[in-house]
Image 1 (cartoon, rainbow, N blue to C red):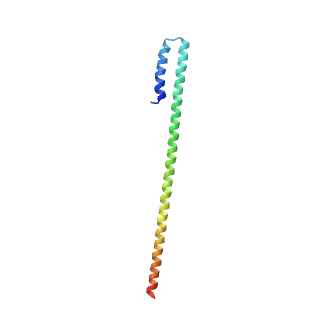
Image 2 (image 1 turned 90 degrees about the vertical axis):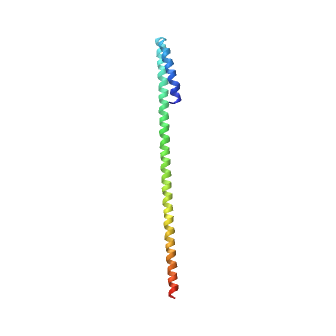
Image 3 (image 1 turned 45 degrees about the horizontal axis):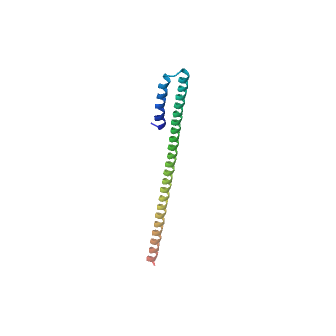
Length: 105
């Protein structure tokens, strides 16, 4: 339970008990104060929920970016391996041709 609610609930209860022994004007003022406190607690909770939602959205975007970067790195590594393999095969073919030419002479 947020600290604001922990503080607000006993305060509202104390105000309500005190209001029972007071005049109608005091009771109305107490009721308005309690309502104001309740509204403040509600607004604070709403702001907290908005902050958590925004943080979750930011975390999701960061995760998406990290996954994209990892995919790009993996693709680049695959391209490097493919190019190295092709270059090795070309070099082997050249060496075999050269050996075959020397054998024919």
